[in-house]
Image (tube, rainbow over all chains, first blue to last red; front, side, top):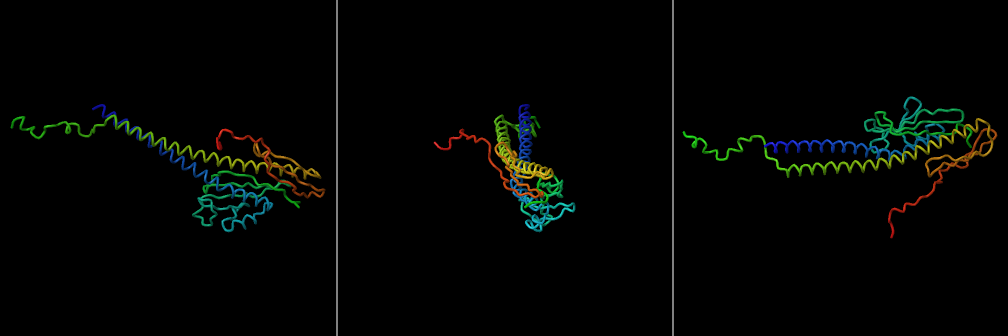
Length: 139
Length: 137
């Protein structure tokens, strides 16, 4: 009788352990896959945002023309470009999952810079670069 | 009624006495353990695969970050040269990765204007072929 009871306990413990580990693995691998997917898809958009900002010399008109209505002012001198979960530009607020925030341009003498960051909709930054350009005097 | 008469329907009383405890053989325990182990191993393999994809993606992002970092360094140096009144061809190379650099050549004129002649990502690292894979034999 005791052997049966121990068998049941062992089986329950093993099953609980397996379910716990598997659940944790599934959650973690889903999160890692999603992050990798978004990073891959965002690379082109990040470069576009940084290059258009630099080419425009800190003027966002090129960027706003390129992304259209999904690119809006953030009210602090920068702009936001909204994306859905597949990193497609979107204009409907409810579908926004990620956004590229191009910060307000800063000028230090001849050097112009702007921070370009990919964020989750909750404001968590995934990765960022600094766009830079020469301020004035270009031929 | 005698004792024999009372127990006429209880020829095998064992099942009634062990109410609530089903017998578990060691084979079932072993089978369950193996199934659980398989489940864990499969999920670990899935996690490992996802982690590999993330590392590749991180490397791509790291390259892009380094490129813009090199551009920033180049722009800082050019801005400093213009501030200092440098006139002529400003040339420099900025490291992006171990195998790649950013080559920059900018003509700076006496009135402070400039013209970018070269702004190019070049491969300058040593090429080390991977001979560990037997692709063609």
